[in-house]
Length: 393
Image (cartoon, rainbow, N blue to C red):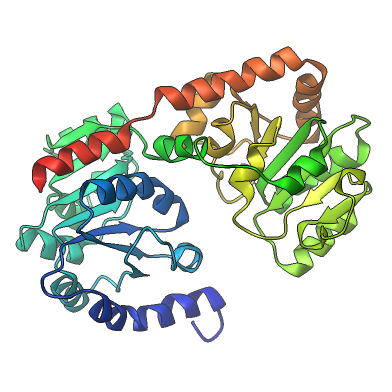
């Protein structure tokens, strides 16, 4: 399949390099913490724990492993880790070889990542192993009659840090008492965003004091609604579109569909940015800072593949608009319930919700405050996890 699919090619070829990278990085007497994540979202959940661990244990080396190319390719050079590689496929041989080479003092798996062979070796070697920011639901394989292998894998964990009471009850039902509610470490991660320098001179020049809608990680279904509003609205507002797909053909098509003055980020050099109505971000790595300039955010994925990160804009105390498919995203469900996130199902609903915000600044501010309060209330998961780790090591 790798011959015909670029992503699978990365998946296959990247794993061929794993063991040589590990052997060049880790030595017999190294103390190592190993953090495994599926992709980019789980990396963001693990990051606050990694950063706090490094402050507490500066002599340890940090290994981060990814399952997915979409996460690894973005973060393979992250400075928070001494080594970042793909996790080898979960065979008995690979697992034994991998853990023999790394010999971690502690292993942390994030959210959904359960790999039975690796976990079994960790258990056999009596290496403390944690699952953090975990969510369990009765629909998952662990709770089915045919899920014996995966249920057995859960027995290898030293402790579970879960996001909600429902997960505690499900694990208790399988006989696991080594579990506590810590919440989602992403709240700590996005809270740290507020403390950094989020200044972007191009955004300041583009916005020029006007209201600004930032649409992040949009998919075609999202963009159909956004483009319709932009092309028909008479409101004096700036728009920033940061599509999930930044490939050339898609960006060209998106720009062509817009009737208002539109500029690509890659072409801003020498332009009078305040003269444009729409800015399309055709690069990665800027969205979280761009959200700091938003008065309202739209987060994509709610009409298609799965909702993207709603906490990143919410932390800045602004209203968030999403599509209808957000079940299973705990933080989005909670913010919808608290009315900080507004859900739209079509163009007309989007128009109504956005216009209500633009016509009533007090409503806009009050809605945004609901989101920032929600984030602040749910911070602290990584501190709880580090406190537990300090008792282990």
